[in-house]
Amino acid sequence: MIRMMVILASALLTTLTWTHEISAASWDFIYECDKLPDDPALKDKVWEVYKTQGIATSDVCEITAKKELHITDPDNKVCFFMQPVKNAEKATVEARVKVLSQSGVGYTILLGIEDGAIYTWLDLFPDRVQLDGGESHKVDMTDYHILRVARDGNDVTIYVDDEKAIQGQPGGTGDRKNIIFGAGSTAGTGEHYWDYVVFTTAGAFSPKELPNFLSMQAIGSRGKVTTCWGTLKHQS
Image (cartoon, rainbow, N blue to C red; front, side, top):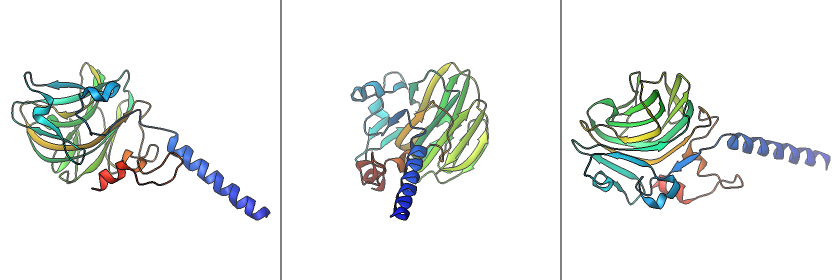
């Protein structure tokens, strides 16, 4: 009886520790790409949009049957999305994305963190990702991959599918304070799909400290593995 109680107590402690590790950090903002980023139905989660004058977001963006944001960026068009933040000195942004084509400057397709005087852009290409102004990492982006940008002051770490890929520094200067993604150049063209974009400004977290959003979707409110809509979406 005593031995059984010890086993149960040990199992409970392990469960509590595991739960604490998962919940120690969390995503502050979640966008699942099931609506256009500037759709009023998103309410307080709506994104600000910067786009070429005279076009509608729906001219270059659509939500697919699989609930993905599909951006087709023709020449002379720009359409990127911004979520204002107060302080992004320590921040983490993650997206599941694939890039079918890109022609133009690096930031034609981008995911990034803008913190006033300092910006951190991850430029996306069909065959690689590149820290704007810095190193690149070869990866076949024509298939979906989970990309993470973690900024800790002047240190930036890029993760691809939970593996560290690039270590570098922020790129340049600006005047905005945003999390940003989308089609960033009028001179370039591209076609890309976004499955989700999530971020937190509570810190620069590795995947061990804050699991990727896709894996967290399979965990129920009581820590049980479940089959949910999000899981089915990503498996389709």
